[in-house]
Length: 247
Image 1 (cartoon, rainbow, N blue to C red):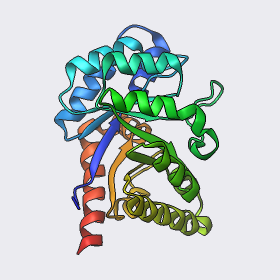
Image 2: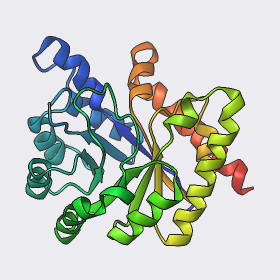
Image 3: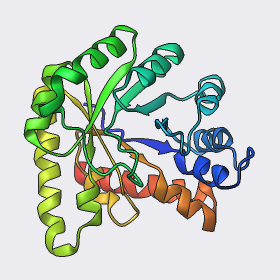
């Protein structure tokens, strides 16, 4: 088992700031290249139906301009499937999407929506795109993702990150059980949504998690101290937690 924990940097909210006034500044592709320079192992971008942040042109430029893998977050729609098949990112993470939500509010219901999701998993996989399912840390959802043939799951850890200390231990236990179950099923396990310097350690310490995807927090911290500083501090927190857990 590879003990290295990858850091995926989500650059959506650089585009959010750009779109607040239009134009091309700040440029999310420039941010992606900087994140790559500062040690990002993956760049993540979510192309939403309403194009509220990342645009189609951003995806084209990311495919052409970065040297690390691109993880395209996408809804299971024919439009997004066509875009993914045209650009062929390294990975596609299928996420739930509601137009009225501010950000992704929870995991995909794979257990209840398998018939709808199966053709998307198959088409993406057949084209050589690595498919992941963004799900809650729930054993039934993991079982369903494995049955669909997705090789990767990304656990939505927002409930843990947003919880108070009283409930945080319980939420962390759910994640731990899900991570172990994913390993038993032969799934590669990632985690994301809401991770900060304060919450990343216990998740990073779970040795079979292969990748963390972090965006909003890193972009927010970059405003105050720069992207390199924010990434270096996050990378150190991840590495320290992983090394202590494996010692």
